[in-house]
Length: 232
Image (cartoon, rainbow, N blue to C red; front, side):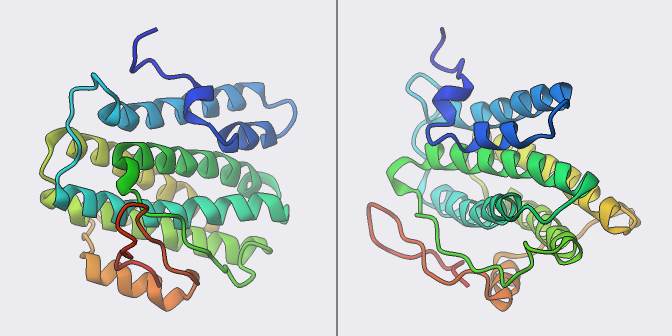
């Protein structure tokens, strides 16, 4: 097996992705297989950048900063969907969508952490203030999170220095855009009403996240002990 030919077991060291796949409704084998393939594919693509022989050096300082910024956003999303699944309050299409999106966001976290190595910030603590316990607040929040992620990735695209990292970030951006359209549809909002989307700057995104007060503890890098700016 080639170094970049990763398996679900290699990527999913803590079992998070397999747990989500196992939560897909009984009898939905095709959907579970699709979810498994999507989780491995998206994570493997970014993870390969950090593997020996993967053809990429460690990210430069500015790229590390951007990747950690993205990582905190992915922590926010992945924890939101994980908590929602564990609460068990969703039903129907929203329940199935949460399982799929949660697994994909956890795959993004795995990939970004592997690309950053010891420079990756730790996961903050979150308090979602009950929005994961009811379907309507969940959908409203999911729309906001996915729209925010799309605008945030778009806002950093021109700042990424390493082309392989830019390609990887754009691949995540397109997935987040599909997530946003899906959650908008489930919430009853037109998925794409405008011809063009605006990017959001990092200060704008940080301000929005801070106002939610969902992040209740600071994340730090294992190596430096410094906190990223996006901490709520």
